[in-house]
Amino acid sequence: MNPGDRTVIQAEIETEYDYWMDLRKHEEEYYKEKDNIAQKVLGKLEEFYPGIKAKVEMIDVATPYTFLRYTRNYRGAFEGWLMTGETLKMPVPKTLDGLNNFYLAGQWVEPGGGVPTAVASGRRIIKKICYNDKKDFVTKNHGNAGNP
View 1 (cartoon, helix red, strand yellow):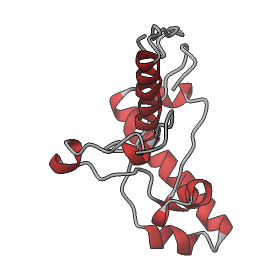
View 2 (spheres, one colour):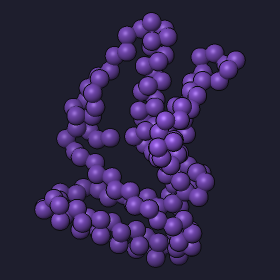
View 3 (cartoon, helix red, strand yellow):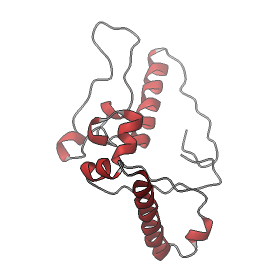
């Protein structure tokens, strides 16, 4: 999730869908609240990592409205599945009967969801395709972006 010489910090905070949908009707207040939250989170990070504020290059605050706008997920859901003991063990099919060479990847076929899970899901499907095609699964390691 980063170009190697940068670090991404992602904070997930539960919130109310209706609050953000109502606030979005007042654009100036909506953006002011997003900035307010960003500064509060950055302030908390500063307590754990003194000096981090001066090093931050970019902040993005995604609300339920943001997720609804970009993904059309129900009520702005940012993950596909709620993580529970039951869903963690629940297998979700990645193929469909009668449809050859078709694979499903993404947050809706993995417990949890979100960007990291979707990326890992795609990687696992590519690995499976390589295995089925009797090809080596080879990746390139771009800095600290992940293991091959």
